[in-house]
Length: 332
View (cartoon, rainbow, N blue to C red):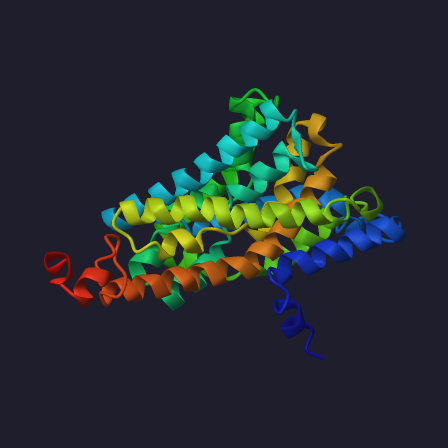
């Protein structure tokens, strides 16, 4: 049986499929794995440990040896994406009392400020160049729930002790230190990151009841479309302003699979979010799937336009009409 190949046919499959399997078990046979010992460790009680492992491996891939131009563009895309996520999330929080068309502030923020790194690297390697791919080093700062927690605390929307905030980012820093000290360690942990993702997703799903989130479908799809269009346009413009072609900006218009774990991580740090975390998780998971479909389409379109500009077919000033008949204006 080609189970692995079938899972990978689903956008973000290694995260999404185990997530929904865990949700199905928790919804229809919630006590099946709660028999104690190592088996029960694979339920929601084991989620924090597996999340810490994931954050550590993600941290090992961060490197300080990045060319200034790539660093500048990467930071620009990072601030653009996180910035627009913050603006929209704060708009939902303050103008719509934390709920817009069924979308919560937590779901909007979690889905919009974390890019799918694997997809980004695949798309920039296919349509861009090494500099485009290299911009992800700076963008990888947004990996995990830390940025979401930081924004919520800074906006006064969450009460999370500073030590809890440190505990979230500590595994990332530990991984980053090791990854920069030893390239072989960085390659070892980085190459094994996908092994952790299904376990993280499965344990996360063990805390979600599908009966409580049946209304998440349409809002989650709308969230995914908003991520691609709003953050995509913002990141493309930022990338081009900083000297890029816009391909890296387009490739950043996705929701990371691990972002589905952010609502639960926030709820663990601030229990006041426990009630909405399951709904937000499903909405973010829907955004993962939608952006996995639409982001490659957007990136391919930006690449095609970029190639046309390089050939002189399309330019920002649109001189094509004049080039066909340079004397048209004078003769008229």
